[in-house]
Length: 453
Image 1: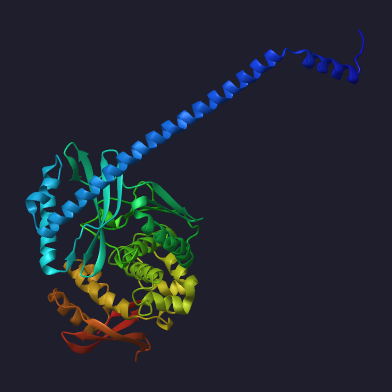
Image 2: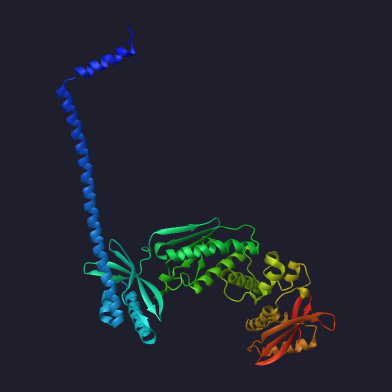
């Protein structure tokens, strides 16, 4: 078998091309062109069909949206004109209770029109159509302040009708995540979700650092449309806070701020309370023990520090943080037991309790308040344990207080701590009792403040 050189192979190929029938070449080119044109035709037909379908869907969707908008504006007009018959005709549900509730809502609108400056002019900020379902975000103005309300509709043969809230039609789900927080929300609550995410991303790790959590757990916040009034923890998911969407509760939600102060305070309080539980290993104090008061003071102070509202400087916990820092706060949190009395402060801070630089006013107000609670609970032993039983004067006052169980609690104005004539530390508590100034004395007995006069 011979070997062909390169020039011989090229020569053979050229010969074959040269020897091909011109008619066959023409037919081959025509077949290629026909295949190309056929392919382009198919692609063009698909594009035209897709365009026709899209245009048809868009036209239908746009028509449904315009019809929905017209229905919403008509319903707004019935409220504005006080036309109950036309208003109730737009409502539709198999649930008679919901129809009755809509009648009550109509009455509330009419009452607001007479008592306040309510503007309902049919302004629809956003509308969504999903098949037979419709949703509208409506603007209302009450006493010059903007409010939003969300109404749901279903398209019946006779047109759109207002139906009970369909919380499955609340928009696509979205999330904002950080290393320690996840905030989930739906499209309707997008502004709220993003604003709340900014806050909890700051609050959650800061609170854990302040209280001394051994580990910062990942917090999940779910903004959901439901009928809860306040944020609440999901029992099956301990680190998940459910925040009710303001637009799903009541007739309307304020729109002049993204997060209302009321909701922001509630979320801050829920986070601070939960972080205290995390830091204290789920401590549940006895409600009449000083431990319960300490827990409440620290939680309220931390929540106030989160939001910047309230007066954290006029607080026991603020004075604790000012003088002993977050290390002192966390030491107190970790030292608490369910029945701890106020003496736990000296143990945690490693100083005599009478020398602590603290604002004692709220503590002694707590002590005076708890006397009444213990008497009303018929907890005589607990009540007597608050008094200096070695002092005859104190015992006489204690018996008198036991007789007058409904006596108004004195209101603390000022506290000064000094050493008494017997060398024992005492607190002079200036109060207002029955509109008159008075002084109540507490003595430090066995590292515990006892009422002595």
